[in-house]
Length: 229
Image (cartoon, rainbow, N blue to C red; front, side, top):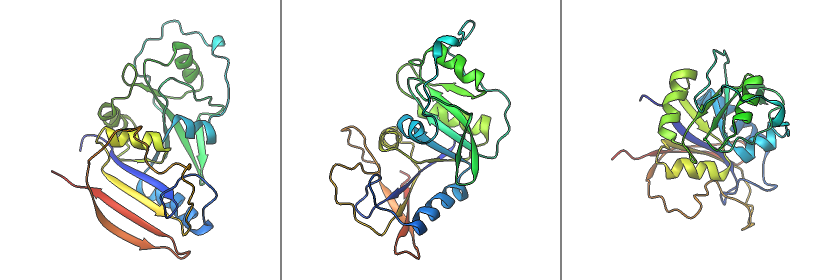
């Protein structure tokens, strides 16, 4: 495969919710550890990154965009793990160039479209955060996955939410496996989001059961693999 393999890796309640008060220390820790067993890269959508890693509000007016074109900026950076941010309009307010999670400092990489301002690209350069320009208004996932494997040695990309970016990968038909760590709780709140939100688009990709690993707290790790036509 000339692109990164994609595994959607989510921590959910029995009824599939990703938000809410459900959870268990055992299955939650297992979920986080499993992420780094399966991948050296954690991918998230813009809202998730802003919530957990890049909540700042930089003054983009102070960053000079002179000479910057809508082209990839990929400086030589060494990192054992990566945080891949899918941020169409360039809104993540990084205050450091990494996402610290579960004992790992994952160096940030931004995936943006041409909706991101050149001032924002200048800001990323000032933070030494590589970026990939993908598409006019929406991502070309196939192209991005090839570049992630080529430039960052990401053989497997773990996409860990939120629901909208999970749904976007699903709509693009590039999801190879789905990994669900199920907490031993039911949420029951219809308002809470589930693992996938395709924004109304029906996706007919078929996945087959691979394995189920019981966890000591009553939870379970389920793995599914996409059927190859």
